[in-house]
Amino acid sequence: MSHYKAPVEDISFILYDLLNAQQLAELPVYADASEDMFRAVIDEAAKLAEQVLQPINASGDQEGCTFDPEQKTVTTPSGFIEAYKTYQEGGWSGLSSPPEFGGQGLPHLLKIVVDELCCSTNLSFGMYPGLSHGAIDLLSQHGNAEQKAYYLPKLNEGVWTGTMCLTEPQCGTDLGLITTKAEPQSDGSYAITGTKIWITGGEHDLSDNIVHLVLAKLPDSPAGSKGISLFVVPKFMEDGDRNPAFCGGLEHKMGIKASATCVMNFEGAKGWLVGEPNQGLKCMFTMMNAARIMVGIQGLGLAETGYQVSLNFAKDRLQSRSLSGAKEPNAKADPIIVHPDVRRMLLKQKVFTEGSRAMAYWTGLQQDLSHQASTPEEKERADDLFQLMTPVVKSYLTDEGYFSSDAGLQSMGGAGFTQDWPLEQLLRDGRIARIYEGTNGIQAMDLVGRKLTMKGGQLARTYFDEMSKLVSGVSNDLHKSNCQAMLAQLQEALGWLMKHALSDPEQAGAIASPLLRMFANATLAVMWANMAKLASESAIQARYSGDFLTGKTKAAEHFFRLHMPEQKALLDDITAGKDSIMALAANEF
Image (cartoon, rainbow, N blue to C red):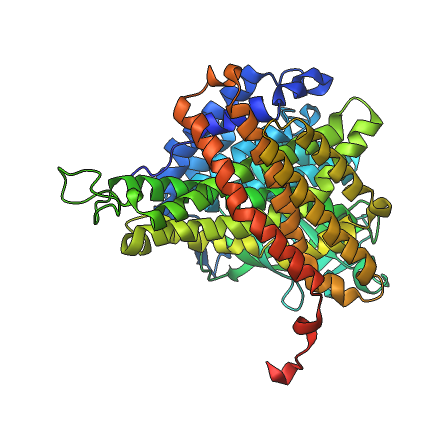
């Protein structure tokens, strides 16, 4: 059963009308990234998602991956090899990579759109090439000339895939506790020994080789995170010999069952240093930042599918009569979409999905401008916004994407709880997105502890300046004043943080998560106000259906109904400080 149709109309509205993504084609490096090019790529990605990835999603979930303990190999579910070959031959692996090593050189913003379509239809599948994209970014920025020439062409072609090997049994967030060792060898390589866990795509049968990017410690390295180095460790050596980097088993997971999540044992495997010694964590952040944006897009993609399924169900499912009188008197009952409580849940989904798409795409646009804008000042401004918004996009989209899917399941009643419909899988698959690539609590601490303190607070100043500019063009006076109020409340929260956190770091930890949500709410308010403004313009009305645009206007009104009170409640939570949170002794819980 087909459950998903790529939301091309909404994607187009956000890209071309809200964000003016056409501006990227004015930059020399993206000269080919015209609106026609964007549309052609998105149309093909929609076909890939709907016709190739969606049909094997449920079956992949039911079949899962299989581990052979004797051969130490992993077999992916039926249809995945063929789907990956289609993905690879379509050139999707190197979509946004530099052309120098076989990439297509298209904007990261376009890749974010493609990621959404893939995550909407088959999250498990998307994990395999997803880590490869991060490996490409990392090696492009930190690899030496020889490493780039050897690894990047194959990764861009998709015949090789990549992994990110950080976590160990005794440490996840606190990577300074890793014990994996890297012993120097006479030929300039290193012997890597240790165990890594939760390694996505650590072993599988989709590609010819797997390129592991591994954090390890050199002999006599400094203690803690300052002593971490990064190494590239291929599954197969250049001469075809098997490198002793073996899968020790698969994790038994709640969701993403068709994604091979591996225990990896490095048994003196040959690796090569990437970047400078003891700078591995800094290098790995290149991969982690790209991965965090993609994880946020996973939350968005799953929410879009959940919304489509539950909306169509609500239009078809006949149950009871409308409270205001029968809407379909010739039928035995009315469709459940007439009931206020069902509408409440559907509107929550619509407001989240369409608003978060705008916020995520806007953040992706800043990523491109941070690399390719015309002047150093423009690049720095865009990078400030991208760095600040990365933890917001990752955390908010995965939290609310999960809750949005949950609302969809609830609106479907018992049907949503069965495997006849995809909502239960969406919930199981989406739950991990709130945890990996740094839990959402860690994202909030990253925002408070790193992003807001960088450059003496410049990132926040850039953000408020940009929001002020975007609000200035809003034509609806009420929407404008609502945006200004939500931004002012966010500024008040930041003022409280500055006053209290310097003398007491626990205050920052206690208010980090609500503060991140305040950033998300304020940004979404600005996005919704601008989308409502566009929906009222005659030039826009000539290009989109009336229902689409009036739906935008009414959804914007509902956004403010939902989130204006929440913004005030979050501010109250923040200014209450840590006292009640930290008051209990451990044995009082």
